[in-house]
Amino acid sequence: MPERIDFPALLAGHTVVIEMINSGDAGLPVLAQLLRVAQPALGATGMAFVEFGPTGGRVIAATGAAEWALGRPLAVDDPDTVCLLSGPRVRQVRVGDLNGKLAGELAGSGLRRMVVSRAEIGGHTVGSLHALYPGDDEPDAEQQGVVAYLASCVAHMYGDQSGLPVHGDGPVVAALADGLAVVDRDGHVRLWNPAAAQVTGRTVDQALSRPLPFPLPPSGQVRDHRMPDGRWLRITSGDLPGPGTLRVVTFRDITDQQRRDHDRELFVAVTSHELRTPVTVIKGYADTLTDHWESLTEVDRRQASRVIGQRANELARLVDRLLSSAAEAGPGDDPPTPFDLGEALRSAVVDLPAELRRRLVLRLPGDLPKALGHRPSLATVLTELTTNAGKYSAPDSPIEITASGDGRLVAFRVSDQGIGIRPEHVERAFDRFWQGESGDRRGYPGAGLGLYLVRRIVEQQNGWVSLRPRTGGGTVAEVRLPRG
Image (cartoon, rainbow, N blue to C red; front, side, top):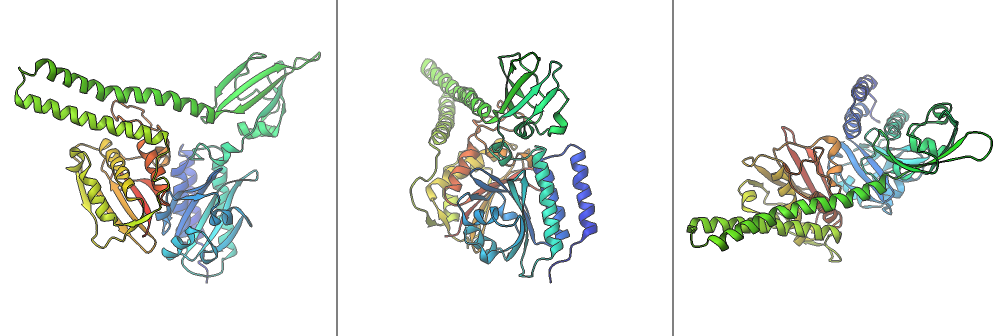
């Protein structure tokens, strides 16, 4: 018998979600709360939401028995992705009927069926909502109806651009086209095409006979304007010929172009600052040794040499990050091979800076299964994750490295007790050059490339990486690799 839906609990939980939205919350925190509410009410073992973009999908929220999948990518040509994006909008899917890698991972977690519904806006799929179950019971019509309703609620969040999509190349942004409007001499809209409604979020009824939702540039000029939701529009206008005083306005979404321009400027600014700091220190201590060698004590000389070595290591790591980012680093064409994850982690720890090594607490089981991947790149992954953990936590606080495995996957985690990460930032943290909401690089130095490279390296080995807030404060970074 299928699980019966606890409608009172669902209604009470959904009320909490609405109150979060009314209080100004948005994006991933609201989505995660919606899944936490839905799982027990639906009698599901786990819940998950996959966001889809032009290049495929990624699990951006998950609960219960599906929590292990958080951060997992789904390639656009993966058979499971094709299955999720085709067929009826809401339906039951048996895990055994899937043909991709995901099927084995789900089965290995004891999950045998799921009720899935696509979240759609104007015919565009923005994601899919999944309620997962361990049994083979036939779905209840009410189960499918509730999952479809919740998927529509999530789609509405995407339509409002309220913190979703979490990726800049997400489905909503990708679907936008050029908008066209005609305004009268008072600046009121007389014509509003469908693309204008998509770009601005204003329907024809909401736009007609009202002022434009952005500044109108003088005739023949171009203006770039940032909308309240953070998107950038490039707006042009021109007078229509004839006796009237109408003006035609065209506008397009240039958010991606602005982001690329910003990335280039940020790259120059960050690298200039980050390279200058160690070079300045190295030069200063080297000049001191050269000009004052005879007057310095042996202790002073050793201290100067030690600082030069530390700063040279920092400089080398930064250059490696920059070169790896430019080359889209990864294991390349080397085939994945089984390797001892526990031994590889212990070996990688030896090469970490001394100030990090003294803070590490390793809890690695002796019977950890082998992982399938590229062992040499693991040192880079661990270096970046532990460096990141050390940067955002107190110098005397521990950094814990743990690991585990199951029938399909092997995972290790790097946990700190630092300032933590906000739920809405757990995906943005993997963007190139992203440095947190404060942007204070003097307090938290770095080029913003570490986590970007980690995700690239891990996903090229058919694994995935995710971040989450740590219970009690701090952040947990988790890497999952196929079992060897």
